[in-house]
Image 1 (cartoon, helix red, strand yellow):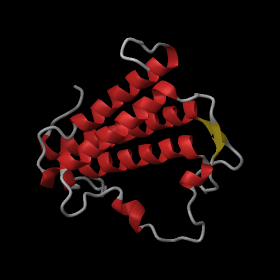
Image 2 (image 1 turned 60 degrees about the vertical axis):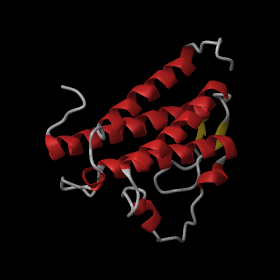
Image 3 (image 1 turned 90 degrees about the horizontal axis):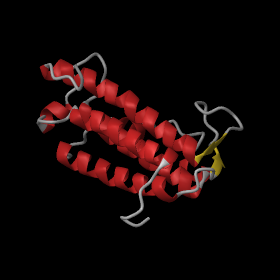
Image 4 (image 1 turned 180 degrees about the vertical axis):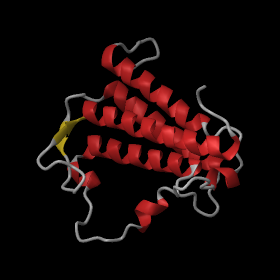
Length: 172
């Protein structure tokens, strides 16, 4: 797409919605120190930095699913190792909020380019997993809607955490 072309329809709607919900998520981190971003001040183990890291990772995985198909998301069904999954929700030693947000912005920019160009009807079967319905296929369109939902859900989590830290609210 050239800079003179303007997106319309579902592509424009998806990009605008993604942008809005990404803003809600990253706004919760505004002005936080790395220590605050890594803190888990609620009953949950979630942190703002960890949530942004998680959303970036999940979005990247779904984009790989669109581009590469089912195999991009398959997991060893015998695996009981959840360390990588749990680490996905936490800021690791040496990680900074700035680096996590920069990574998220890179993932988002790549996703946005895909929204602009991919065949929205491109579909792949979901991998076999207890959390996916058996035999379902998702289109690129459906995956992008899922990314919006995932981002929105975790933006809400982050807003609660931020309000607990210092009273700041994304809205209201």
